[in-house]
View 1 (cartoon, one colour):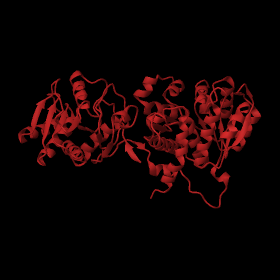
View 2 (cartoon, rainbow, N blue to C red):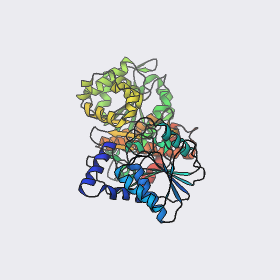
View 3 (cartoon, rainbow, N blue to C red):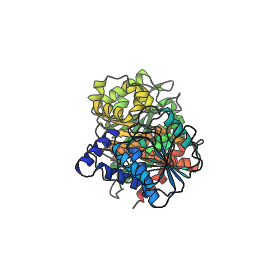
View 4 (tube, rainbow, N blue to C red):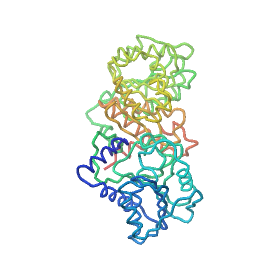
Length: 497
C-alpha cells in the first residue's frame, strides 16, 4: 500500500519535517529536483507559476533545467512570493533565466512542455480570472503538461473542481492526496506518480489499496478442504420489476468465480423459473412473493441465517415494507457478515439507527453518493466535497464498514481508510454494483477481515471492468462483460511474483 495524506495531514507533516530534520529551502530543492528527474523533457519548456511554495518548486525546476542547457521560460501570474520561493526566484533572475508576466492573451503554442506550478494542494474554491485564463491556455495547447504536486484548480481532498489543468503527468510530492484519485481526478490526470522527498506522516495516512494487497485476500486452496471451507453465501434479491434474473445471475457468477464454496440465490418464487437457466453452479432458495415482490417469511429467513456465513441483500429486490421487514429482522437476529446494497440501502435509511448500532452482524454498506445521501442526511454536494470524512463519520457512528462508490472507491471502518482507484467510465452501467456485491460476498465467505474483503472486492471488480472495457469499448460494455473478466484478473493476481 502507498500512503495517501489529507491536505491537513500533509501540511502538518511538512511543517514537522522542516522543524526536526530539513530546512524549508532544502525541502523545496528536493521537490523541484524530484520533478526534474522524473520527466522526459522536450524543450522549449514553459513553467507557469503562481505565488506560493508550488511556484517555488517551479523556480527550482527552472534552475535545474537551465543548468542542463534546456531552453525554459518562467511565466509569472503574481508579483507575490513565498519566502523560499523568492529565494529561488532571485537566483533564477541572477542566472539570466527568461521571466515573463502572464497576460490574458498569452499563448503557449510554441512550447513542447508546460509545467503547472500555479496552485498547490491547499487550493479550494474557484480560480481567479487571470489564473483561469492561464489554465484555459494550458489546456488548449498541444504541449505535454506536467502538474507539480496536484493539478491547479483541483481540490486536494475531494478531487472536485470548477475548472483545472488537464495534465499528461502529475508529479505528487511527499505523498499522494485524496484529490489525486477521487471524483473528477481521473478525468483530468492522465498519468501520475509520487516522489518521496523525506516527509513522514505525523497522523495515520489513508492507504492506496494495490494488487499485492488484493492478492492477500485470495486464499490459496488446500487439497485437504471442501466447499464449506470457503464459505456458504446467500444472495437475497430479485423482483419481476427489476430484471432480477440477469442481475442475480451475474452476482452469483461473480461469487462463484471469486472462490465462494457454495452460492445460494434467494429470490421471489415466481421469478425462479427465469433465473434457473442463468445459473448452473448456484442453488436456488425460493421465497414467497406477491406478483414478483418478495414477502417477509420468518422461517425462510431463519433458514438462510442459520446456514450461511455471509448474506448479501438488495440487488434488484425493490423497495417495499416487506423488504424493510426482512432487512430489519436480519439486522436483529443474524450473526454473520451482511452486505447491504442497492434497494436494501434505501430501506436501511428508514430503519432506526440503534438497530444498526446494536446489530450482531458485521455489516458492509455499499452506497453510491445518492444512496449515501439518504443514509446520512447529507446532500450529495456535501458528500462530494469531503467524501472521506462523510464515509469515516458514518462508519464510526454505526460500527459498520462503508464502501463508497465513485470513480475511485473509499472503504473505511471509521479508523482505517483504503482507496481503490481501479475501475473505469464504462462501469457506469446497470448491474455493475450487483457484480461488486457478488465479489465481496465471496471474499467475505473466507476472509475474517471484512475491510480487506470489501477493499479486495472493489479492486477485483474494478480491474475486471477495466479489462472488459479494453476488450470491448467503454460504450458497449455491460456488467456481464465485467463478470466474465474476473477469472482472468484473478489468474493474473495469483501468478504475481
